[in-house]
Figure 1 (tube, rainbow, N blue to C red):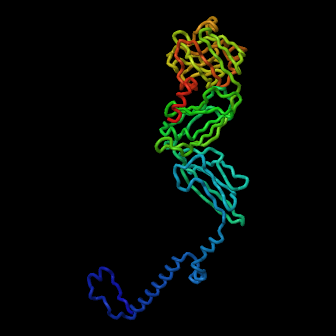
Figure 2 (tube, rainbow, N blue to C red):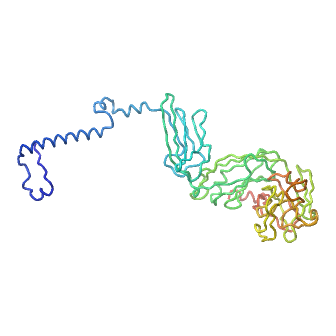
Length: 432
């Protein structure tokens, strides 16, 4: 059947009567044959381009639509590789990044920062069934993981994932004391300070457990929205082992803010040492396991700057340190750059320390300090002095009790001094 020849648009619009079913000339007929043949060739090419592979006959050879793709799938590796952080995910955990293999073994896994390509070291399990990073995984960072392996027939498989870890803005973390593996005194609490205010206190508290081999009940107490301490009713039993399980990963601490910590920590309680400072006699009695092992003359706070009463816990030790009155509200009254054998008793600046600059001999006689407990010492922290003996025989976590001072009892959250809060109050607020 002959088809009309479509003219150029301008000609067709100007002379519509010239076109229609008029018989073409021989030249026109030959051109039409060539056009039809060309169109047929284009149609064949289009059919070829839309085929996924092979010719029609090859595709027809398969049963029930099975072609070369199906054949390839049939011969594919049975190894299943799972990357915990899904490809394209945001707010991924920094703690449970891992790769697992099923139906085969992993051969190699690489983890890198997406920006810059910095590698994160990792460890492939001896059985080839898992991998995890050994280097630090940062918050708010995009990472790439490529995992390769083979099944039991040697067929290869690869899995890739690119993901972003939870941002610092959307997560919280707690710094804590004491350190894992440390040995501390009987008064050492477990103390957390969170980098963001916690509103879901009950949920956060329920995901931190502290237990002692002594069997003592350990209870957590919130001092404010960012500080949580744990302790038993009485001092820890000497020689006991305390374990802490932190399971805050993905726990919502406040609306849209999630924890990123998952860790087990343990520490050991040393011998029982409690030292008592009597302000009225200016004397400190050091006892271990209830027996007096040393009596040291001291000089406590002056009448203008008395020392706090109460149970205080050594939280830091410095062979030498600078003490500047400006840092604790005393203006320019003092700035001593090499205070020897200093042990912190409060956050507000109360220390037990050596003193080489006092005139005369106030130790055992007068209170002359700005609230600290001073002991006789020499400049440079050398020599056999009472302050050095006390420093050498003290642990972080040892208790120093001050009594007989005209000042008030130290606040329980001023340092690690929660022992000054009655147990009834400590436990009453434990879940709030």
